[in-house]
Length: 293
Image (cartoon, rainbow, N blue to C red):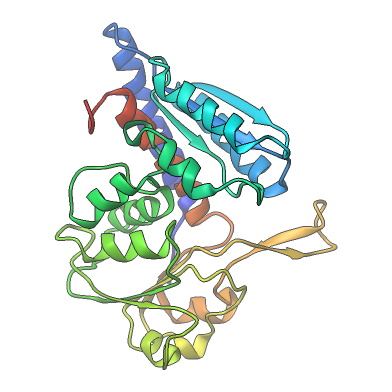
């Protein structure tokens, strides 16, 4: 069993990005600039955004953090999005989700200029991904593809089960695994809460990508010997032994599933660090105007 070390891979990619940024700047080019909008004080969002700012520093990017209280109006937020769309110095920006209930997330996502949508959530980027055109790919699926690539995990012709059908992970992940590419070329089944014989589907899978948001959902009896298991789950579970009072728990019951796997990602330290580094890769592409002129 090989443990897939997302932390080590992400550190390596950050070094690669930083080296390229220094070359760009030395040649008289512009330092990539990522902006982030954070609404309210959600604990998870605060952590994610802090990590994104840190990653920007490591990559040699310029970063801006724009904060709003939870009572910001939708109109005010949309006005800021439009301002960032027009700001020539900002190469890419994100609006950290989730947003307060009174703001339409979809409206905000669609208001972002797709050429600056480094989260890859805009319908134009999603549509381009679906038909295999260059685009900003949403960060978590992109990070998983990078892990499969760097660990030389064979995907062509393999049976891949994606657990979960969210717009952020499940759907784009299934699309990427189907693409005529390496990694890719897999036979993909998407399972969700209404799937029949979900256990049987998993038992037949060479690769399981669990993004269902239920701690310990995938158990040993669902996994065949030698399978590759990628755990996207990050649920906060109370833990009195931790200073924070909680620990992150994956969708996979790691201790019992790991011995059966050829490769498996831990939680934390697997997919998580790759999500942030994928955002950095998209920001570098945005800075270079590599996808959209």
